[in-house]
Each structure stands twice: as C-alpha cells, then as structure tokens.
Image 1 (cartoon, rainbow, N blue to C red):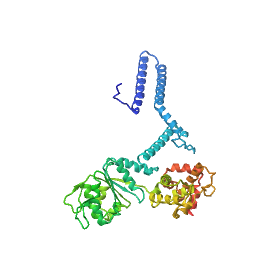
Image 2: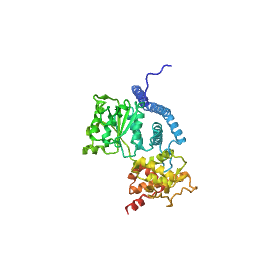
Image 3: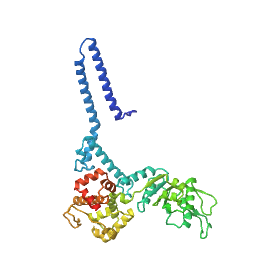
Image 4: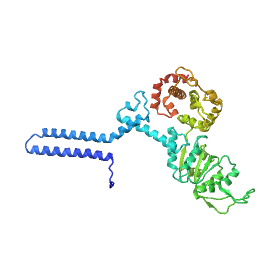
Length: 447
C-alpha cells in the first residue's frame, strides 16, 4: 500500500472544514434569496428553513469532529486517572475530575508529563536524584549540552554534586567510549599542577627520570574534568587558555607542541565573576570556560529531594533500617550547609547508631536537638506507636514541614512556597487541608 505524501494537521483541516461549510451556506442563501426576489416572493421562510438545516448540519459536523479528536484524549485521561498516575486530592475541588473538561485535561496532561519527566530522569541519570523542579532543569541542561563538544562550567556550593554532573555529561556525550580524566586543582600543589596537566620530558627537572604524558594527553579523544578551577594559579590559567584555543599542549622541557583533542568540563564552588573583578581569575579564561554554564542549586533550595536522597543512601547500608517521621522531619528541615555530602554522612552516622528505626536521638548531635515535629495534639510521633498507619505518619510529617517553612518565612506563604519548592496555590491548598493557622504562626514569629 502506497503511503500518502501529504499530511494535514488538525489545527488546519478543522478550520478549513467549517470555513467550507460557511461559504457553502452563504452561496445557498444568496441563490435562494436571488431566485425568490426575481419571482416576487418573500425569501424569508426559505432562508429560515435552509439556515436551520445548515445550522443542524454544522452542529453534527462539529460533534463528529469533536468526538473523533477528543475521544482518544478522554480515553487517555480516564485511563491515567484509573491507573493512579495523576494526583486526585479531594480538597476544594483540587481533583482533576472536579474541574471543567479543559482544566481537567490540562491538569492530567501536566501531571502525566511530570511523571514521564521523572521516569526519563531516573532512566537516563540513575545516579542523580532529581525529583525537584530545580534539579530536573539541571538534567535538561545536561541532555542539551552533552552531545556537543561545548565547554561547560559547573558552579555550585561544595557538596552539591558537581562531579556527578560532569560524569553524566561525559557519559551522554559522543566521547563516552574514551577516557574521562579528573583532576582536582585545589588538591595538587601549585608547583606540581602544571606537570600533572601537561606532562614533562625526561630531565625537565630534578627527579624527572622518564617522560610522562599529562592529563590532557591521557584524555586525548575524551573529556578532562577540572574540578575547583577557581583555585588554579594565574600562570597555569594562561596555559589552560592556550590549550582551549590552540588544541595543543607543551610538556615541561618539551621542544614542540603536542596536539590534543579533548573536551573540557570545569567546576568550582567559588564566585568566579567576583574573582575576575578582583583580578584573581583571568577574564579571558572565564569567558572561554563559561560557554555553557550550569548552576547547581544547594540542597536547602530543593528539600523535596531529601527523602529520596536518604532512601538512596540507605541502599548502601548492610542492615535494613527505616527513618522515623520525627527524624525525617529534622533531616528535611535542616539547612545542610554541606549539601548532599553532609546529608550522606549524617545518614551513614545515624545508621551506625540506630537499629531497625532511626530516631532523632540517633542523628548527629548538630541535628538531634535542633527541632521537634509539631502535630495536632502538640506531641511527637513515636516510632514505636504501631497504631499510626503510613498515611497518617506521612500527613503529620508533611504538616510539620509546612509549619516549619511558615515559621522560617514569618508566615509569608509566598516565601514558604519558594522554600518548599512548590507553587503558592499548592501551599494554600495544603494549609487549608491541615487547618494550619498562618496568622497565629505570623504572630508567634514576630513576638
């Protein structure tokens, strides 16, 4: 069977159909009116009859087209709701079913798209926990830049996962079959950094008993990851710029340049732009590195990732343990200046002291006494109370996190929503659901 060479999109063919019906109705009306006027007759009854007929015909056509177009959409929405893919909370008409049809479709499509994005992120980047919107944006940037050879500058606080991002860029690039060479510019003394990066010839300096290729030569055809490049000396920065511009390196003691084909990914936890303004970092190198910048958010700006990170860290434990709701609340509410690295160490430490259930007293001292989990009765949820089912525990945990966020934002819901990484409307629905008195929290924080 021969395939059609022409494909007409729905948003073109539907208007064309109704335009054709309108033109046909106009021509028929004109013809009837003209003939009746020539015969000295009143054309009104005939126009009313044919107008009604064309109106009914247009209505039927619209109904058929709508059914053909929206039928599969309605089936998809119903199946998505029945499979539990979408969130169907019953608070103040927040359920997609409680809305009008278009709002319902829009809500379901948005939620399904979010689920698919998370599944894709988990499949493509299994080593990166990215449930939050901020981290999914980072993954989107990785997918965009990885297939290219563009230089990438990753910035972010210490412990946010810059090395993981650099590794993901290499694995999803066209160079993934070649070497990925890492070098920590802050961990190597200034006197040895150049020899590590560019290599040296035999006899180039005392102790150079044999020729040694540098990191750029070792990574030829692959990727070089320059971690903490903000700590690199200015003299070495100039040579890095030459490698990026000329695609060649000079070994210490060498007599001729050596061509290299490498992609450079750099990272730093320092404010490079401020360093450029202070003269501590070369401006031309900054512009050459900053071709595609990726800014990693700190953990305190994506608290919704914390439970998933904890779950991931617990997989490496030799014993089966769980985190009690009070302990989970403390972990989620902590500011984590050391970011993911600090969280991983805290979880590892807690598992060593805890048994089957990690309680607040098993957390590191800096966390254990920092806060308590509020509940409607004003008491802590005990991990030993078996009468509390999972749904109740999760609701109490969510309420405690909401109250803590509102306290930290002085009762300003817009700021609390930003702190939690959710929309203000979503926060408002949750506040109504749990009956949280925001005005009381505001009065309490201002005392």
